[in-house]
Image 1 (spheres, one colour):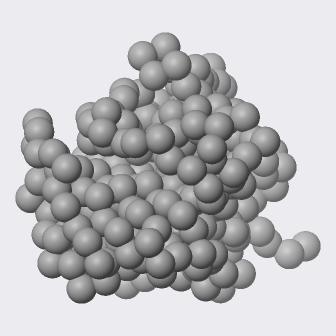
Image 2: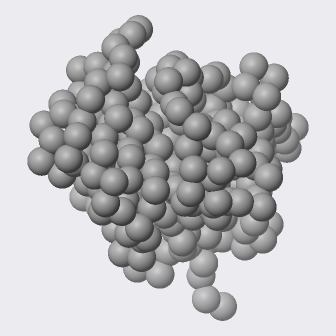
Length: 304
């Protein structure tokens, strides 16, 4: 019988041997399989680059327990300052006997499925599953950006947006907070929503009236099939990759926005005040103005 392997995320290959035929399950890698939908007791092994968020990490471990065959192997690793120090205790709470080692500033844990604590499995899955967040009045899920609170940068942007019209896009749409608000304008024909996180797209699908919406689970750094004649783009660009600040991420979003807009199209951007976005925008847009600076954020209007 053929063995079945899974992988979640991008663990350093110098620290763990990854089977060439392993199925990728990360929600942050467009096109990956869904661990939630994996058949119970179908995997012989899964290797997890553990998410830094506690609820998200425990949820992923619990899903892995369900997907593993009896006797199947779970290998997980994380940086010591990104949840690695808690891996062993969390796996033990699920009923695993854990072997742990430390290498290259990572904690690496290996365990075999024997008799899992099913009550804890259920609790962790329930804790990390989608839910309606009253504070946002939106469906969301742990692991999604700003999953249980309204992002102050996005809120500030909405306070300054004019009524938009025509065809547009929301880059890094999250669960749909910005797009849902701007679609109150009846002048908008359609808005395309893009996010690298499958969970965000699934929550946006629950939050939006999809009549004037298209949803795209997409990594904009690698997306080649994008429109180039839009009237507007709105974006709250990311600037972290796997927990580390990466200013090039947001800068790449702005370059993509410029390519997607028609001449005279407008890009509205919210960003942390310290990020160097003006230097990227000025060469690719005809006009760039700072609309407001407040509470550590800047709002930009950029016209192509």
